Image 1 (cartoon, rainbow, N blue to C red):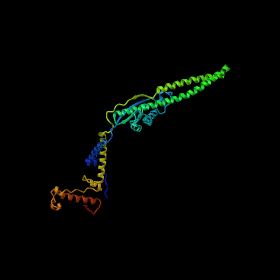
Image 2: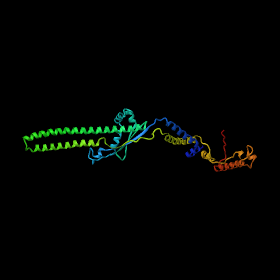
Image 3: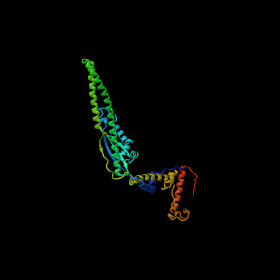
Image 4: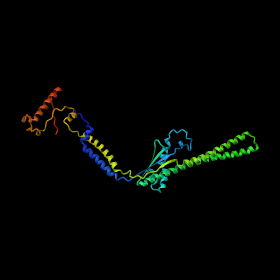
Amino acid sequence: PAKGREPALLAAAWRNKWLVLFVGVLTAAAVYGLSYLQPTRYEAGAGLLLNDPRTSGVFEDASSLVLDPGRYVRNQARILESSQVAARASEILDGTPSASEVEESVSASPANDLDEVTVRGVQPTANGAVALVDAVVQAYEELVSGQVQTAADDAIATLEASKNALQQRVAELDAALVAAPEDAALIAERNSAASQLVTIDTRIGQISVNAALYGSGVQLYIPPKTPGSPVQPRPLRNAAVAGVLGIIAGVGLAWWREERNQRAEDRQDPAAILDAPLLGSIPAFWEVNAEGPAPTVTTPESPASEAYHFVVSSLGFALSEVNGKTVTVSYKH
């Protein structure tokens, strides 16, 4: 039985180079035209250098252990993309774009080695993209500042409640010491309560100062620059990418075509496909000036006649190699 042969990929591509080129050019041209159907979009980007409260010493001891320093920055990036920030940014922009459109048009990427977040916004105009990023950053700062102030107010309220209780206790102890001024236990308790009052007052002042210092947590804001060219559409870039992909597809099509329609391009190809040796080749009679349908009879000295004799000799040699005695000749039209 004959054995099939898979065509070589590069050889198939080269033999069908015009097909490959046609597919690549057609794909690039189609994508180039379709690119103009995309709406125009500009992208602006800004940088936020953040003040991580866990490592800055604003709210906690700076020497405290931080297992994942990048977690805070990643969390802030998600807040920048949140619906709360989007809603406030839409308000700042007078409702255009809407909150949902802001959320879809804004992305925030945390840096790997810095407490920095890059904010990007996409809009139909260059100025609109810049305004969107500015509004999102403003909304974020307002949100964080509000959260910080709320946390500080809650902490101060708790401390004030403890302070009031201690002041009441100090008043009770003072009244008791009027009756027993030499009572050592009352004196010690009164001194301890007074010391706690001083500590609470110090902590209240510290929280107020820390909240004011931290503010929105943004150490540095790198404002966006007005983009000079749109990020969409980009017909040349899209066409180039599509052309490369089209060429790859064309190579695959060429290989498939060769695999489905194998034909002999070289005199040795049938031997590889049929797993049988090439015994010889007979030239076209008109090319060698052979006369008649049987050149071995009419022109025995012609190259065609010699080719027939060579094939017969090769066939005899091949039969002797396998001890064969019978030859079957088939013809398909």
